[in-house]
Image (cartoon, rainbow, N blue to C red):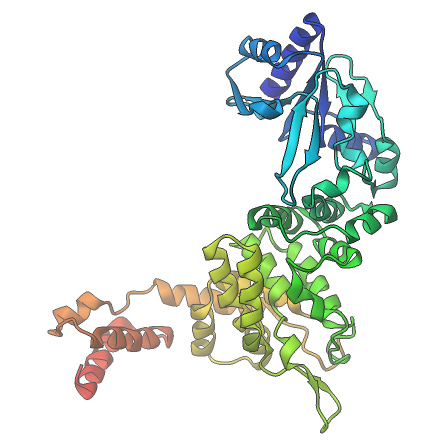
Length: 462
């Protein structure tokens, strides 16, 4: 319903602009995605587009503002840049403008509005040819000034202008995330141009924005990192990933190749399971970070000539923390990944060893998300390992998780139970409750657990 209202408002703006001597175009991703649909054999429509952008040519700013007031409640969130919106609608309205970099950051631009610049010059500031397509709002005429339709057909991302493209360093990351999301390749000349662009002045928030799109909206988020690797742009933002390239693993258990290849394959398998995950963003970051510890722990044993990475699941935490602090703004997500990385091998080990229910209860109790830990274990299993390599058992893990949930749903010893039994709250209470919790995980019923906890209190003087 809202999308229809947005398109209706866009057409009304175009009609009023035409009456005033101007012309309105749909621009940006909504046009690109419409023509991708058409090339894939679909109808090709703006219906359902989440974001609609239009650009109005030939009108002065005040004229456009007055016009917008006839359509809805306008807001100027970039008035000096000629950028407006209509409140309560997903519609952005821009005027044609020129941009010139005055600094190294994503927002360090001198912008000047020029209503008479014309579609070709206005679209020159766009990043890629496929994003520079323009469609007349009223007539549906497509303006393709830079060969974007051919690049859409070839599934290629190609920069529009050699001079303007490098002025915005965020475009390097945008190239990588578009390649991942759209399943496009990046033109070699664009790759070469990106190699010399300095990304260090970008903000953490902007980098994470592109990272999130790649991780959460791509079938193969590995493409994001593969493109950055080809550009030589893993550093500075994803520097911890670079040593994974060429880092050998035991080919018996990892015939797919080095730790980089393994990590990228796990990342894509995790992406196929992210809809099941309770914390989808953290889940994908877990996949990205889970084997960073192999950088410092991998060695070839003189005894058996095999490559081992003992303790990598915990030794890698400083590297995990370094990467997360640089690219992740959400403390809750960072906490989730820090918790899950040390646990990531244990579900598959448990499924192989078939330990006691008490043991798996303890495992799930440690995890920020026991269910996500199971889905990750599934994604982390090598697909073509040696014949004696464990292939996993998700059904077993899910059965044990159900037992854990049932255990945790039963009545258990709480602080008020200890107080009612005559104990005085104090420093020892946390120790007593921790003891009671262990009994709970062992499946001890509350009445018996309370007796054992009180006995433990007498024994320890609690």
